[in-house]
Every structure is written in C-alpha cells, then in structure tokens.
Image (cartoon, rainbow, N blue to C red; front, side, top):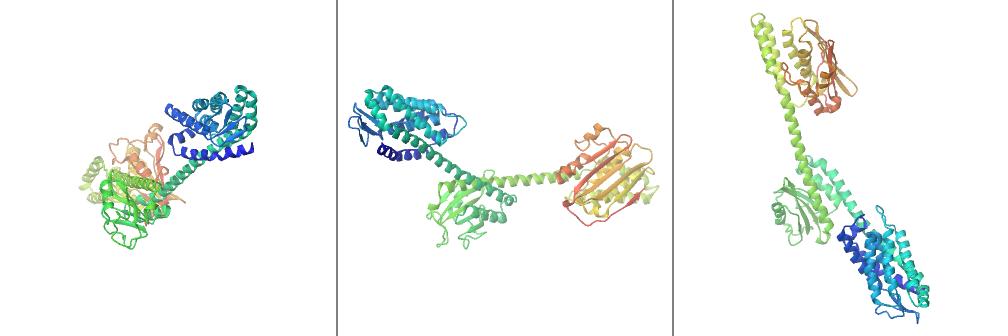
Length: 589
C-alpha cells in the first residue's frame, strides 16, 4: 500500500508538467478567474480535461487481483485486472473550474475511455468518472476562488465515491473488496494531493505573472507622475534631459536618449561621450522610425554607430507622436540584444504612447491658457460707447463755461483710456493703479453729478501693493454710480474700503443707492446682464476674471437692501503677489 502511494505520487510529476502548460493557454486563464464560460470555452474545457483524464488513466498502474502485483504502465487490462490511476484529478479540476457541465462532460469522455479498456471494474470506474464530475461541479461557487484545501477534499471525496461504486457494481465481489483494500487509501490520498497540487501550480504561475504586470503598471504610473511636470512645458532640451534621467533610473537600461526629427536633444548613460546633445541623427533606423512612425529594434548590424568602440550594440527605438505626426523618438540602448525581452519592448512601446499623450496634453493646456488670456484681454478691452459719448458731451458743455475744468476732465478721460489700454497688455496690476483708474473715472462722473456725489476712501497703504487683474475695481464703482445712485437727487455716497488681513486683502465698494431685490441679487455676477449705460464689463465679467485668476474663494460677494444701498466686496490672496504702491486715505467731493 505504501509502495503504491509513493509510486502514484511520483507520477504526479506529469501532473505538474501539464499544469504548467495549461497556464500558457488563454482560455484556461479565463476559466480560472471567470464566473461564466461561454459555450465555446465550455467545449474546449470539456475536451481538454477529458483528454487529461485519459492521460491519468494511461499513467496508472495495472493491478491483478489474482497475483496482487502491479504493472508499471497500463497497456492492456485483463478480466481480473483493475487500474490504480489519477484520472479523477482532471475531472475534479474540470468541475471546480468550469462547473458541473464541464465536469460531467470531461467525466463522460474519460469514463467511456476507461470502460473501453475493459477489466472487471471498467463499468464501475466509467460511471464513477461521471459522478466525480457532477460532485466537483456542485462544489463550485460563484464569485469565490477555489481554495487548495477544497481541491484536496473534493479530490479525496470523488475517489472515495469511486471505491464505493466499485464495491457496489464490480463483480466478483471478493476481488472488488481485495482491490479496494489495497488501492483505496493510496488512491484517495494521491488524487487529493494531486488535485491540490495541480491547482496550486496554476494559481502560483498566474498570480506571479499578475504580480509582474502590477509592478510594471506601478512603475509606469510612477514614471508618468514624475515626467508630467517636465513635459508640461513641451519637448525641449531641459524637459527631455529630465525625462531621460527618470527613465534611466526606473528602467535601468545602458542608456536612454530622446531626439526630435533632426537631432539628439538628450542622452543619459553609456556612450554620452559621442552621443552628444544637439548632434544630428546618426543612424538610418532612427530616421526610419520617424518616417514610418513604428517601433523598431536595432541590433549590432543595424545600429550603425559612427563610433567604432561604442558600448551600445542594441536599441529599442519608439516614435513620439503629436496629432498622428512623429515629432521625435525615444531610444533605449542596451549592450546586448539578449537584454531586449518582449516585456521590455511592450514597456517601451507603452512609455512612448504615454509620453506622446503627455506632450499632447501639454499642447492642449498651453492652448487653453492662451485662450483664457485672450478672453481676459478681450473682457478688459471693452469700453462702452455710451460712457465715452456722455463723457465727451460733458467736456464739450464745459469748454466755454469752465475751460480749466474741461481741460482737467480731458486729462482724467485720457488717464482713464490709458488705463484701459494698459489693461490689455498686462496680466496683473496693483490696487494702487486700480485706484488711480477709479479716481480718473470718478472725476468725470463727479462733473456730471455736480453737488450730488460724495466719494470717501478708507484705504490701508499696505493693501495697495496687492495684485489683481486689470480693470477689476473700476467696473464695481461704475456699477454703484450707474445702477445705484443715478436716480437719486442728492446725498449720493460711495465708500471705497481696502484693507489688508493676515492672508487676504479685502476690497469693498458701498453705495447708498436704490439697492436691488433678492431675485436680482442672485443673478448679479453669476449670469451676463445687459448694461445700456456702463462700460460693458459688468460685474459678471469682473467676477469671472477674479475666479479664473484666484479661484472660487475670490468671487464677488453682494449684499443689498432696496432703497438702502448695495455692498460689493471680494478678497484676494496675498500670495497672488506684491508690488510697491502708495496709499490714499480721505474723501473727495
């Protein structure tokens, strides 16, 4: 009995070999980790495991109940002989991995074959094979991986059931009893161990490959995270050098290089004494990659380095593309072609796609920034013709009556227009400059609202060094004049408050005008509103530019009460920048 056990365990080496071969087959991988097999996969699994069961039968030992001796290999089975075999292993794995349909199908193939060999246990073993497939299939659970302990137990149970069926069906009974006594325990143990061993090898190989894939994915993500900060600025000598250094550290080839369409723009690693930056492309295969846009592998016969003692005798050259046009190459050098494995080629191919995508993202980001700047400049450049017409009318009316005042208003209008034009050429300006712009505007408006408008200022000198988008404060003050106090007969007041806090600078414009309803208040600064008398910028555009520059925390805050007045305020971060400026505190009439 012990000798039989060890002999059958020796035969499990064949099981190990077959299990390893199975891990190479895609359909088998899918079956291991899939809850549902399609019909084609089921048929393939039935045929494979049925054939595996047949191999298990032929690899068994023929046992004679008359002599109680074993033959090393099964060829022919006499009427008084039976087979101690590992047929159950394939059938059990078929049921556990594919379900009872696959298990029964594999058992049917292996069972019919066993019946055809003959022997007094032929029918019993044939039926037991089908039953083993049903038993193992019934233990398969959806959404759960098969455990090794389960495979061992089910393999043992299936073999135990086979021993019972032999006792029930095989005749003569005394031979059946003798057979079960001698081979029962060894076959139960061997087939249980075999089922668990078969499953363990499959899982270990597949898990190891998945671990390698996960490590490669992790490495790729790490590379993407490190290279993105450099490629945001496009492909140039600085960004290419940084990217090559990152790739050299992560992949550890002999050297890494990047080129544009005509020259080498970065090289890190061996050969940097003659693979120099800014030197023209040296190899024909690199030019072919640029022309064809396809990855190529160069060996010592095709690399054609001009330096005869170059230590780099193999390379993988991948295209860098932008909008389906090849703009350069990514080159990984090795000292031998043997170092270039399929995994390396796949990794480099993926990296070239990754870097190409990052370059396209950088291009799109630059286009977005340019569009945003263009939008801001367009908003800043808007001047309402109504305001210009009214200002000129006021000046004309004063030319004869008060020429000095008319001249002062022309100067104020000139300063106002100059500030508007300057706003289209700079991205940021100081609150001090904004205040000058406001005063130029208010000088014109005070001439129109004679003895009607009073403007007061509460301004901290330190706060005036804070930076804001050009033409931010003036539209808010204009809104207070045009929509707040224009319809009042007297006692019109505007208060401008600029104070510096710990982290932010607060700007506030308060008027005692008409105010507005809560419904109107909800719309102001959120949606564009038509202004027939303002400069055209409006609070909506001011709010939009503030949030584009500083984020949602800097959006306009409005408070208003009908017939009482309106308060418009915003906060800008001090980290946005500082500049030299001057303060102003007092009142004007």
